[in-house]
Image (cartoon, rainbow, N blue to C red):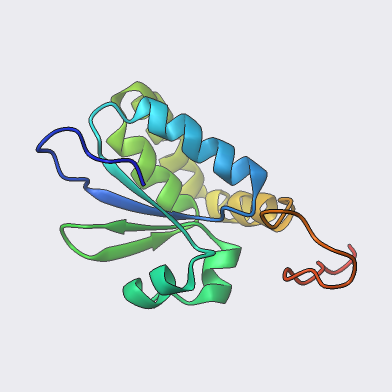
Length: 139
């Protein structure tokens, strides 16, 4: 987590998979775009974080979670993407498209399809058969 250099408090906590290279890179990009310091970033690979926020590990591995801090409201998947986009004025242009995809019923399906196909690489990699990440089923 990046220290907050101003008196501003984050409004959203993003729970992301730090074993996912795409997810980790996305968080690095968000940190650069987050000039108003709206986000707190937490890895779901830290079990104490999951316990503190009462987040189910299996659910967190399937879908990104966000917490709207003020309301203590948890959102997942495409709704987390929407929440993130709403916090960044530079990305507001994408909010209507996400909203339309949700209304059409395609947003969550597309999110889940992409999430199922992401690569998972434990920090330090795997050593033979002792990989802490279960192998995904063949498609």
